Figure 1 (cartoon, rainbow, N blue to C red):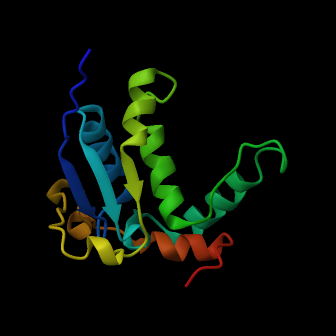
Figure 2: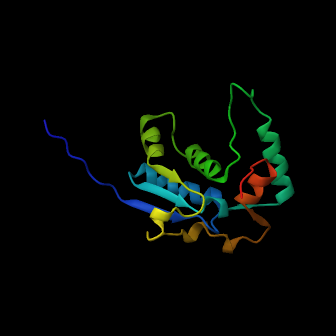
Length: 148
């Protein structure tokens, strides 16, 4: 019995200046198609809308659940992006779980990935936004992230 392993393509996505929801939906489609996806600069992704209302909404959401039993809500930007992508996958099905395992998210660019060619999605760029927007790092700091 011989097993063959096929090497799947890996996409390196630069999240800087991309809208979180639109980027996540594109990444979810790539994951379901069998690609590996690595998201870099997660803290520089953008939320659209008024900052005060989004922060109030996030703080209200953090109060849901029991502290020891969950659900657990992340405050780190990379984990927030990963959870957003997970919400766009059929996670309770086997194909969704295997797709989710092919996703990696980093804040900044790790030293070993500096030379990789990064892609950016034109349909997720914030240049077409007409209203206010702010970065994911700003939101994370407001809700309790003690990062940079």
